[in-house]
Length: 221
Image 1 (tube, rainbow, N blue to C red):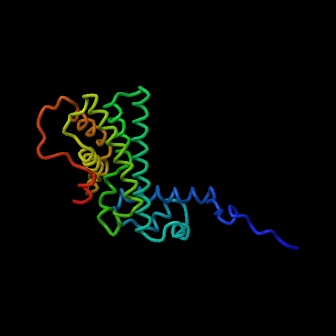
Image 2: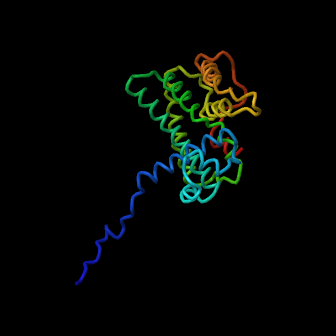
Image 3: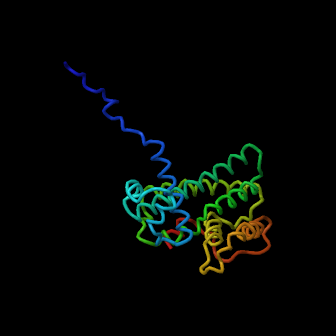
């Protein structure tokens, strides 16, 4: 019996990941993000697997080593922050939120992703120039620039503020402080962010020294 050769679409078709495999991957990324906040870049991989509720074999089937895992954690968090920017922009476009209110909503949502805890990760063997990361950062930069531009155009944001200024503050205010005495620091983050945001509103009460930071400048520095 002669069997017909598979058609070209069939030859190129790749199996889709199973739903349980995707859930395992997401659990691993979520657990790794939590442990990065708690332990820094030297996160224990056995503990990542335990907290995710998977075996070590499942972890290594998804991520070949610590660097690969951290790479995907940073990508996932960056993409989530970009989603927050997109949602804030959409709310502003539909009239649900004013320009500065949209910026404020984004900053508080981004803070919950604990971006500051990931900054030390970028100083390790992690490849900060990986094309996927650069593309993800570009999407984030574009979204935040749009939010800032609209707040500037509305006359609600002081004119000497740039994307980097906003991200520096987010990074610093969400970075865990050393020592067990500071474990409850999280409860102050949104309070201090609100104080910072109030200082960004126009009209400005003082002239800022230096020049507005850029994300590219921060990466190169």
